[in-house]
Amino acid sequence: MDRHDWDARYAGAPTVWGLEPNRFVAAECADLPPGRALDLACGEGRNAVWLAARGWRVTGVDFSPVAIDKARRLARDQGVDADFLVADLRGYEPAPRGHDLVLLAYLQVPDEDRRVILPRAAAAVAPGGVFLLVAHDRRNVTHGTGGPQDPRVCYDAGDVVALLGDLVVERAGEVTREVDGRTAIDVLVRARRATG
Image (cartoon, rainbow, N blue to C red; front, side, top):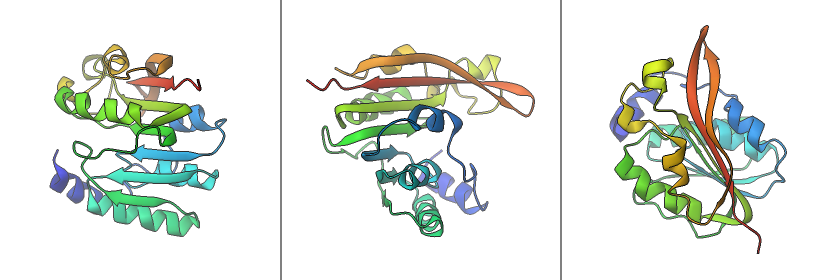
């Protein structure tokens, strides 16, 4: 889907993904000390706003102006400060080592785009900071439910790890969640930059 398709999807419902943070994002980030967070492909801002409410200084980035407008409204409604900007991640270059948390939740793009976006995201992790990616796993197409049905935009944990440069991988593999009585298969990769 291109930006115009996403604009239409976000404009067509009060919220596409709901207001609560993604369950894996919440579980993996709940105990992290607040710092500077970068939420790439933030959509309507549910994860960014949740982080901001927990004391993080958050920047959310998405290529859909409709999504960013909704994210700004959600932050305002929740009474939190968060910065949101419209940018295509294929051209966006975050400050190297500038964020204590870099989050990518369900950025379903082809491999050629991942090879550009993920190394830049990994490079944006500050010393001691965390990189967290959650996405639809490639196996979900044939063995799970929901999500995109094009395996070219789905992930394999090993492919993600190979793009993370010098980050130290803490966790990489499949995770599952129940969706309407069926099981969806996601990939979760968590890595950290050494402090030395």
